[in-house]
Length: 431
Image (cartoon, rainbow, N blue to C red; front, side, top):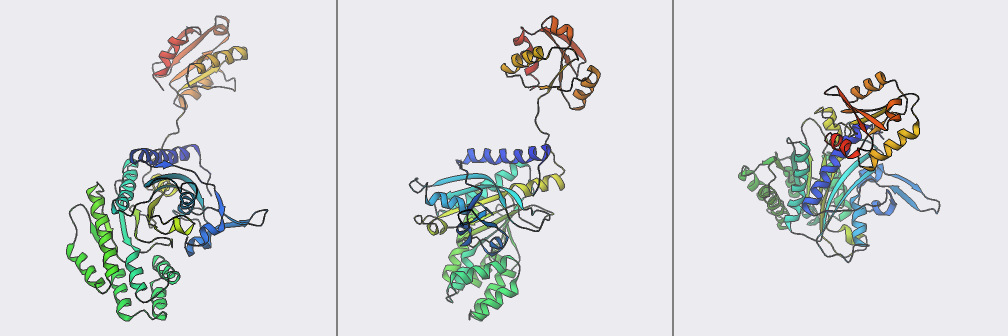
């Protein structure tokens, strides 16, 4: 779990500010849920990988709790309870830290930040396309133009497995193995459940089929037709694939101009997905920096009414690491550009009086509390990129004045402290 130093925190906050900007542009209302939740909230449908990596414990009343490993389940809980009377569609956003007992490596930390976009109450493919659109906008505003997407639909594989009466729990297990790239284990389970050879062959074909890249009007229509032919024995699988293609077309039409790789055999580790799924990636890294999909049964699972839903969780921590290490991008922490120093022997009450006058006029500044010599104060101010050095010496105190030194122009003028409006006019331009 990482400490964030000032420059790292500034970069994180820069990303958060952009996510919040997109919230306001698309109508997402930000909410916050507790860091600690009951274990049962994540036990049911979070997926084997997350269940294995949760930080869980018993509280003093003997209840099993977790430090949240992700946030979508918490948001669904919120919708099923406190927002159950809200009129759909409900667009919610969140900025939250999550915790998983991962082996620390590139893109995997035990504490990490996410920014979520969630839509409740709509099964319209426009809502799925909107999630791709907001994801695209966030990355674009950050400056990550090299972004691309992988998209799939869990309904394709689930429909085939359902036709052989494979129950949902075993479907989840098979999809988890596929997501973990343990394809052989997935085939072995299907074989043990008497899934037909034709079905296993078809699943193998769509999993191993080449990526179908779609960008604006450029797509291999023949490759899409071939997938439909493979899925032809299963009507619901074809419907799921057609739903996926409609979502992609809507996303592209709405302005998503990054490459979208259509992967009909794609799976994701979270078990609550029911339809469209996606990951958002960048070059030179093997992990996704954003992911999500449709989860139409989660709110109902937590006691709410049947509520279609779709969303994503943008990996703020992974984006930070990518920007710092792959792009060498840094954000300078914001601090005042005015430094006030006073000389030895000056009455501190006069210093406090000046500070009060200036700050009461909303003039941001830092004050030296080390009583440096003027040469040292000047050196510190220049080194830390201050624009003005305010100086209070004994003579300034005696005449109720303050000296303002412009560090760029190397000029210095005295002003009566009572002329605070004139001082403010000079200083406010820099901030």
